[in-house]
Amino acid sequence: MSKTPTTGTLKHGLKIGQDVHRDFEFRADVTAEDYFAAEDEAKSNDTLRFRAALTARQLARIGTFTGPFNSSLLGKLKPADLAQLMRVREALEEEGNAEPSGGLTS
Image 1: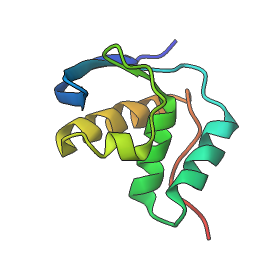
Image 2: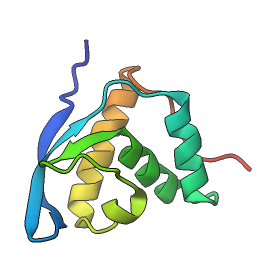
Image 3: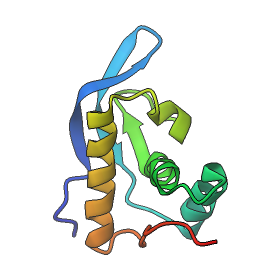
């Protein structure tokens, strides 16, 4: 069982339309396909874009919005909110609930 909460609240939130969504939840069922898709989305050896794409793939929801999520959508977040989401995803990874994302290889 995960020690890291898979839910939380963003300080600033994600504005979609007129609504600002703050509560988030990560999926528990991460697959290799999530890593492949994140690598495809990053399209380069840019570790930050890869981490953002992987975070987007693992999000279940922000507020009532259930996706699809991608790095472009997460790019609308304030840096502190994006960093928070990445920290949660990385903590889940450290617990063994996701595979390593140390960066892309050439």
